[in-house]
Image 1: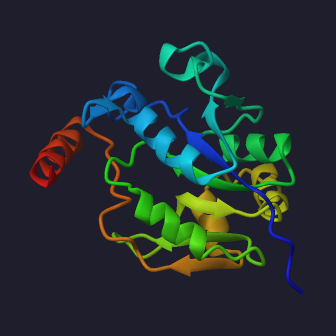
Image 2: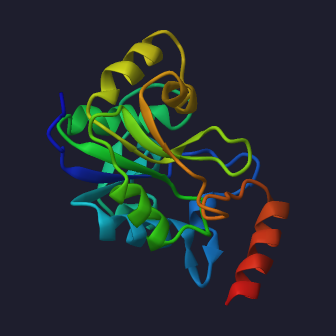
Length: 199
């Protein structure tokens, strides 16, 4: 039985503590603008509505305050709190969930994900180019994924990647370097050099 296609909303995850980077990753500039704003523009262009996922302590942060927000209502470490909070607020939407620290991400990659979307699956995601496992933070989570994520959350399982592995996920080939992320000052410097060489 095929499911009706739910409206596609966007959720930009920006609530991470950025401990390895030692500063707010969302504010790091690439190509002249904070990566949060660059990722926001990409997401807002391909979804019906888009929101930034924030912790309560971040809602008045100047970088995030001007954008539509969904404040975490779940106590959890990591992105599952943001995903569950968004699903609770708009339960009939599918969510294109995006990490804010993907400097190589482009429109073509998001278009490919949306074109391959399977509303009968729990989610549609790319395989990682690094380990071949599903990438949960550039993925479309259908409304039916909420029950699975909530059940896992209540059992203390906060890893969205494991949820993708254990459910009916439509998996796409890795999109080259588009999902390479940056977690440390050393990785950031290397990424800046890569971007400059592409400019």
